[in-house]
Length: 182
Image (tube, rainbow, N blue to C red; front, side):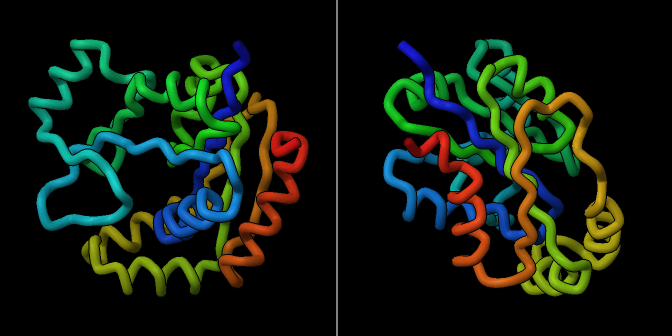
């Protein structure tokens, strides 16, 4: 049985990855979002995720619970092995990934489509400030990394500017995914 493609949504902090993924899942029949495991402390919200302590994350890692994992911004992120079952049931699965693990994800999942979101620097700064999750210094550090390039060797990348309306962004992504929706 052929597994559904993995659609990795990447981009700088504040670019709107969670909003875009939620809108894609709502608009595209058969696309499912993967729920990540994150060692984010209590009080820090964001996407829908499974919050665990570092100790629990490390035990899950030892138990082979993750198809993919990585550290970023002082936290640990994991994609549960359940992604395999989701790929059997869905037309495609959406996952929020770090640019640093895209080649590893391509090796692990095979069919990987990268949706690389960008936005104007002013838009990113405003979004980071309004969500109130990071200090001013952390916001500046994240804005400095906003234009980090994608790694060389990715098979399929759809680049989309998310500075405008969410509806326009989703339409552009769905147009780019059209072969996978057939």
